[in-house]
Image: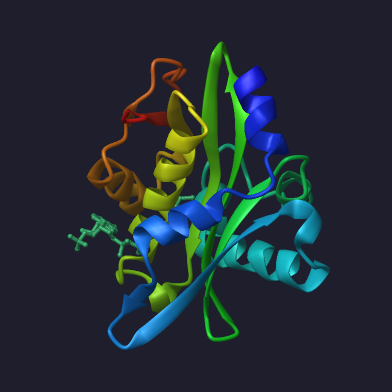
Length: 187
Ligand SMILES: CC(C)(COP(=O)(O)OP(=O)(O)OC[C@H]1O[C@@H](n2cnc3c(N)ncnc32)[C@H](O)[C@@H]1OP(=O)(O)O)[C@@H](O)C(=O)NCCC(=O)NCCS
């Protein structure tokens, strides 16, 4: 628990990662990446994040047993200790990830709750870049692994996570609708 508390109380070590990874440019477009805690996120942005989730994966939720529950999603987005990596193209939202440092069973983990890239920005390496940043954050905060829950019917996301090196986690409950995946932190 101490590692998790430490990771949550430290102000912002994202600058270290930005320095290490350098500016994120793709085909003449220079994306701006920022790290934010939930308390720094304004209402308009949180609404935009929710809209992006619904347009990207709302249908996958609706066609699974979990269903789409907007109020619950908003509660999750606003939950304590939620951390955000936001990618913008000028002033336009291009994508984001939401994660938390937390205990998962007896492991200190970086739990990735959301990874969403706007359709017009998909396939440009933004998702992989956000994942690499989370991998670095997990490493500097000494988390054992990155864990995430993926809807089994979202085959593209499953392939993307496989490409990133995720495997079925030991805590996966073997149910039909979703899979729990993880990737160990490299030392
Ligand atoms: C899944 C998602 C996060 C991937 O991000 P992205 O920015 O589009 O992907 P990237 O451009 O970073 O791709 C990186 C690599 O992953 C691979 N990849 C990406 N999407 C893939 C897919 N659908 N199938 C197979 N491989 C894929 C690519 O081969 C690429 O490798 P390359 O650089 O050698 O070509 C993004 O497409 C997305 O937001 N999708 C909709 C929402 C979603 O499903 N979110 C995740 C679950 S909640």
